[in-house]
Image (cartoon, rainbow, N blue to C red; front, side):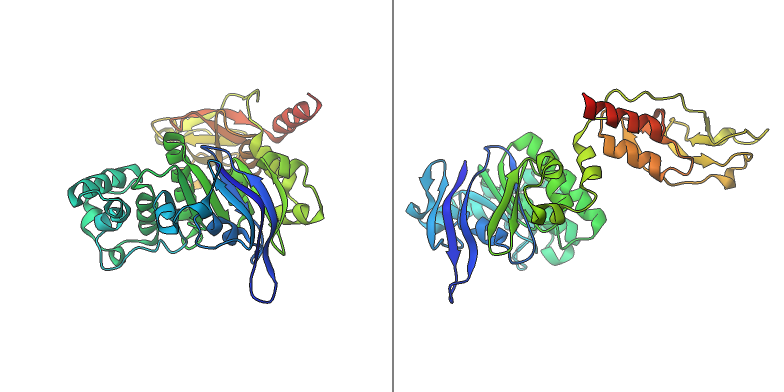
Length: 355
């Protein structure tokens, strides 16, 4: 869908922002550009919609040189989401979302109807359409920015560090929302970030840029984690890359042990010898009781959970974070499905390596 052919960008003084970049993004996939500050990832993104013009080389969309198209017309065929959302402060949410359809000739009624539909798509209440950007939270503004980028139903979506300005909790929520949208819409997305975790979790393929605008490695995330091509990539992805690589290995085949669990409303009576898992009335984990106690006030909360069918990384993390040393597996509804210990997870990892 989007191709770079020996693309170089040099600024005054001859300094290279991007040096001889060649890569092809996959149609309907998320390609992440990641690297340290000043490595050329944002410059590369902006050359796709001609916000930046290359000094040499060619950028192609569906085999056509983007330089052959008027810049304004080209940009209206691509969605663009930036770090600060870039909403027009004097326009309502609906009118912000309707901006590109209106530029493309849609009537105000049709553009607003489309904007109203997109509020639901990005998980916002319809009532927010009448508000102005200043009346929204940072996370809501970013969702509106995504909706505006989708308004003309573009095949390509460019995202320049879109979630870096929000807090970690909202950021995780927005990242999940992006993956949900991608499952339904299958856009071709170029996504810029400096966060290696975000790149590895969100990207179908990842382009790691080094200083001087050099493309160091371009591959699926699991391949980069398992086999970085040089010392720079190995250092950039971090010393814990082996643990991160477990995020791409399914937890299928883990043998779960039955959970010795009791509903919170049934606590009391004789103490048990070991840790006891406490659940709510629906069978969802609520915490752990230490050995020898049964009082409700003694329940210890904490520890992550892993959903059946998720990754070995989440399974191992659930074990390591659990106060009892047992990871809790839950089904899609959040109900306890069983327990797992570190030895079981490590055996499964070893079996995957030998198999």
